[in-house]
Amino acid sequence: MGEVLHSWKVQRLIPLFRDVAELGINIPQIMRRTITVLNPFRINPDLHEDADLSGPIIFCVLFGVCQLLAGKLHFGVILGWTTLASLFLYMVFNLLAGKNGSLDLYRCVSLVGYCLIPMVLFSALSIFVPGRCRKNFLSHFLLLNYASLHRDART
Image (cartoon, rainbow, N blue to C red; front, side, top):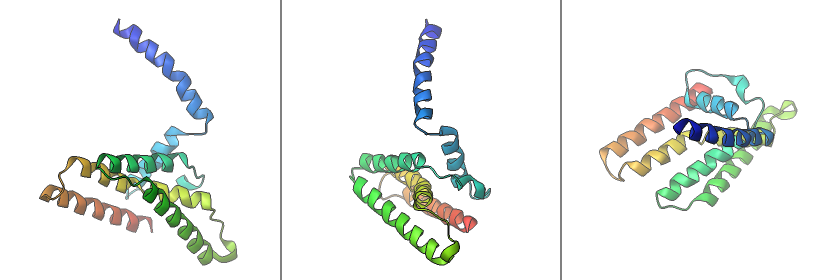
């Protein structure tokens, strides 16, 4: 009985995965980019050559859901700051590059969206750890050091 139920579920999920591929959502590519962002010691600069917005949208929604579970409704703030950060990143990079700059806004939004991953982890961890305790302080300290180490390894 269990095998029949399992095969029925798999047969129902296969068209769903085909529909995701038709929408242009490349789940293995999102996983590779996520692992690249989470591993500061192995840098793959060619991975972000073809930008996508499906991964950043997933991480923005996850960040908003984690904030919502913590009792804070910040969807507009998350999207607003992500938009402003993307616009400023686009403006600064293109001003620095001059006429040779080829960084488009789509790629900037993708990069800023994938940079939300440490904040999503931080927010998810804050749901389960009480507000003012040593464990929470230690986890915040470790995640902030990880994010700064990750930033230093990228530059």
